[in-house]
Length: 164
Image 1 (cartoon, one colour):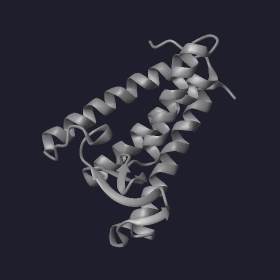
Image 2 (cartoon, one colour):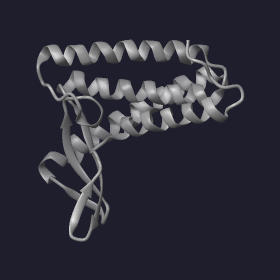
Image 3 (cartoon, one colour):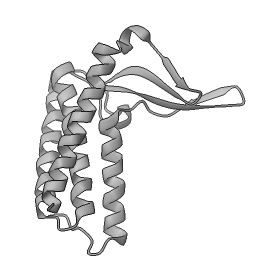
C-alpha cells in the first residue's frame, strides 16, 4: 500500500468513526436526554455543543463567524491534503490523514448542527475538588494523534516529512 493510499484510508476511517459515534450518541443513545452518563470514576459521556474552535476558544454563534471558521477549515484541509500528497513517509501521511479526517468530521458537525458535537469528558477528584479536562470527540482524538505522529516523524523519522 502506498503512503498516500494509507493517508486517504486514515482520513476516511476517521470521518466514518467520528460521525458514527456522534450519530449514535445523539440519536441511538439519546445523550441529550440522558444528561451526564458516568462510564468510569474518571470518564463521563456528556453532550456539549462547541460553537468555537479548539478548547472552546472564539465562542461565537453568529453566521459570519461560523462561515469564517468553515473557510479557515477548508483552506487548512486543502493545504494538509497537498502536504499529504507530497509526503513520502508512511507515518507522516497517515498522520496527515488523521488530521484531515478529524477536521472534516468536525466540519460536518458545523454544517449539520451549527456547532461541533463533543461528548467525552475526563476528570479527576482531588481533595473534594473535581478537575475536568475539555469535552472532546473522536475527531479531536484523531487530530491530536496526527499532530503527535507528525512531531515524532519530524524529529525522529527518517527522512522527516517536509511541509510544502
